[in-house]
Image (cartoon, rainbow, N blue to C red; front, side, top):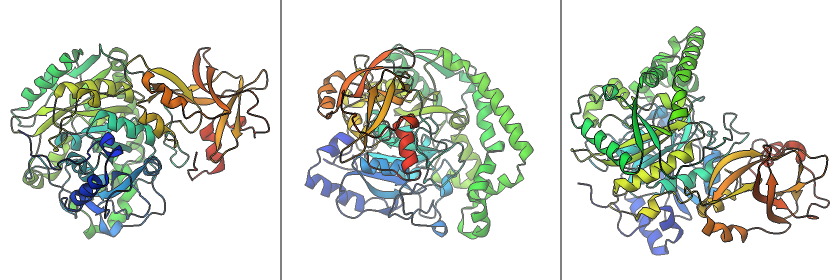
Length: 583
């Protein structure tokens, strides 16, 4: 049994919003205004100008106050975080800043002076955290996409507890500048959505390195499979349910769904992963939280949540010796887990072992919070990607789900399996009561029949025109370098754009990216190509050739040569090291 729909005849997915009428937008504005006040710390007034986006309140959005769940910490940023700015440039509009566990410290969603966002499936139960407001906003259909953050599982645990998709990207794939840090070396900006395609569309827009975040990076992507997945799961003995007698039952149903989509399942020894999870709070990494907000908490003791104070203060007891000992231990554990990725397409685990009530968490806030991180705490430490997918409902009528985990750069590969699994689960979306046909739940660009296109400028992940590619159902599949036979020039026009020119001598290798474009969408892409750009063959550093955007002969005449930068992003950083420019 699931709740009654929260919004009737209102847009809830990206496709809905692209065709939303003024009356539908007005209905959304009314629903937003009437929403549980604990979801949004601040919200917009009136109909959305674009596609509504919820932003966790530890992520900066220009014009909106950032509090990180602590009113005494409040400041008003002049600039948006890169992730927010890119989504806004692609047509999103910030609908509000969402509630969270204070300073993103917690997986429960109850550590906030702004109240507890109501779990839409049972008001007595926790919503999950720390990205509580973002997850509930998506589950209730108030926004199609919401940004959260994820250090220990904050982008995954709330996804399960609210029956939505939670995409925890590879570390650094989405820049984390403009985010109040928890553990800066581990923090990820995460994405909540009702469907895998919507989460992927937001990822395609927000992803891509920037000089504003030195931890951001470009990654070669594992190509998605269309089926025949090999999946590892923990041995049943490694599955603690913390007193929930219904846990094994829903887990078995989830495994049956994996088999139904054609996955082969093998049990593995999960011990190295669990040992890594223990390092996050029992090891030196807790000191990163102390470095981030410890001085503020000491100076504003009474303004901070008691559980958050205790966790952050504990980092003061960690020494430099502890830090190096922890790094050595992590290196050994990572080496022990690496063979998993040679043999399997994904590791699949329960997203969280159980639900807790608000009263149960308040009675034992530290221990019960810790149980929720059993299957999440190791992911960022081991530099892995993860995707939380709903798979059904517990016998107590609360949502349950699994997380697909893979190595850095496996985001798209996980999405192909996750989309198939979501289709097989055949669930209502969040708490909206809506169901979508299978073709809208499954990622559009996963089939092998797509056309690979190389891009070198504004279509790169995170650049302004990546939104147009995402709208066509395209996905980025890998980073590339050309053979050393090319120059890059800066073409004239209203907006700066590069031209890739093949030369007989004096060339260099240029960085780019390959996107897979569905064949039916190729004409729409070609309509965007304007002279002197054309679609031609590009030779790569490994000797292969791929179709890509090139500059037609003669089009480069008198254009400034920017080849020495080795690529478009490096040139942009040299021009505006801390600012994004249109492109």
